[in-house]
Image 1 (spheres, rainbow over the protein chains, first blue to last red):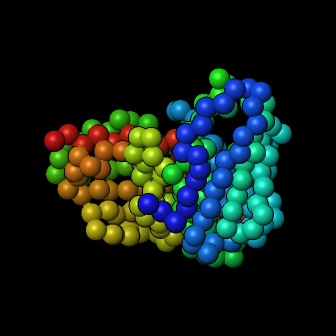
Image 2 (tube, chains in turn yellow, orange):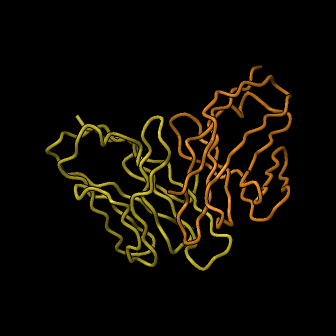
Length: 115
Length: 110
């Protein structure tokens, strides 16, 4: 198991529900990431936080709302999702910018199904 | 548009053989490259990183980088059935973002 944990591991929600995904890293890293992985498609970067500041929003619909209260925790708030949002949502962390050998480590992911 | 290209496979090799996984990238400015292994239903797990031209060996794994040809590969020696997985190639661009390929599925036949 890595130093990045995610909860819940599985989530089924209706299109009108509001839910949140949680990520926690125990590696002392400064950067955290949300990725979406759909079947047959490459990993898609959604959001990047560096030292709790959002530095990237990769044209993600507003029904996905990230929150980074500190460098160890990252949330993804979900509301009024669509069935096509069903995917594996992965959190990752890394030392962050300025490190020439910056490497991202992934959490186990949350398998999301939107009905 | 920066891209990382991989053959989706499956690449099927017999147990004990060398598996060769290949990847090309479009961004000439990329300096860092990564290979991740992903088992079905699991998250990506870092196998190797490589930053300089040439070979880098770690146990049964060898990563090869050729920046002139914009080509990076992963060799797995003495392949085992437990190596059966999808292998993701990624490059880190001039900022901090990782750009992933779609992955190559490897099957090692007992």
